[in-house]
Length: 84
Image 1: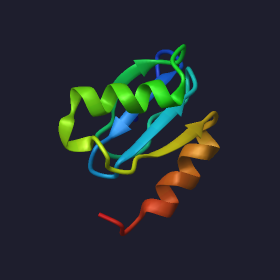
Image 2 (image 1 turned 180 degrees about the vertical axis):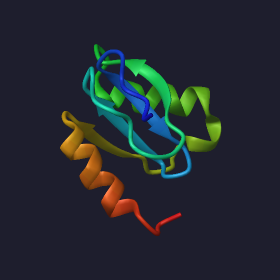
Image 3 (image 1 turned 180 degrees about the horizontal axis):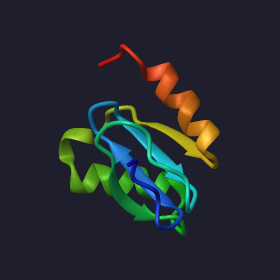
Image 4 (image 1 turned 45 degrees about the horizontal axis):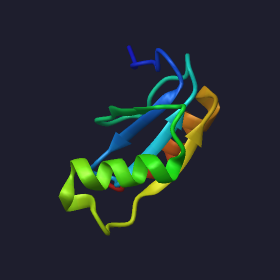
């Protein structure tokens, strides 16, 4: 059973260098996603915080996306197939 966002928040997949703002009740994409911040933070604040917490990410480009529905997640999963 896929993991579902319990609340709207930012989740990160370090392998993909992607941070997703996932709406409450929407399933998380395939792969290892970790909760990194509450949705009350702005994207730039999340990026700065991640650079402070994970120095290896400082200066590295992170892709920020928004997933508001399971259809968005399905589209992302489809676009990432074979990218591993």
